Figure 1 (cartoon, rainbow over the protein chains, first blue to last red):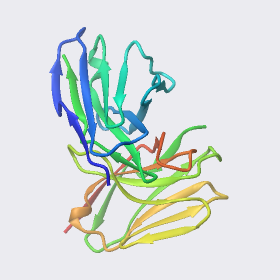
Figure 2: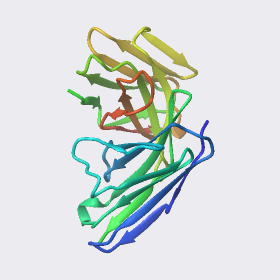
Figure 3: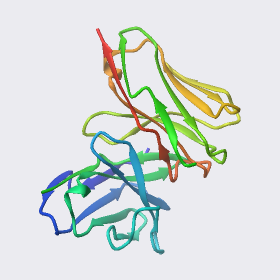
Figure 4: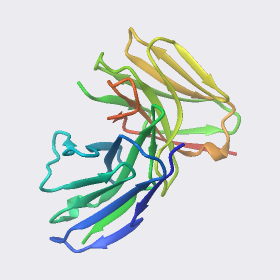
Length: 112
Length: 113
């Protein structure tokens, strides 16, 4: 299996600020994914991050709000920009490894 | 058309009983159907997955039943244990793999003594 580490595990941020979440994988993977899980809700795919190309965003998510970097095959970052209380969620990094999806433990973000 | 509908929202089962969670989908392009287990404060972990070329897959106490014509699939947990108490998500993908998953709404399972 692929082991995924996310940082930070949780944070409380002021509205209007930005937070960058880091995702580190112990294996080289082609695709990494970022999901959002709102409190008590399901997971929604934000974007797909491929190394060497622009991230692909799902409907309802835009690059200006959620810029993503993918500098190499084991690392990615997701930034939540100009935060509002509605951005309070758990953000999860995921990778596809041997046709299965593995998830990090998530970053619990609270915007006040 | 990308939705995956999951029921029930919550479920209470006695220890030793069978837990059954159901999912339905509309997009006939979906070709990979995994189930995930999530404990509080943790990311989802893959339990079992099925592709539409088979109608049932069993791994230990966990079984997926798949009905392609009805566009439904279900998770059965046999001999349910208190340690199974968690939130379960069904999901689907149209890529044949676990990339770009569409998740169901989740079922909170509680197994009582």
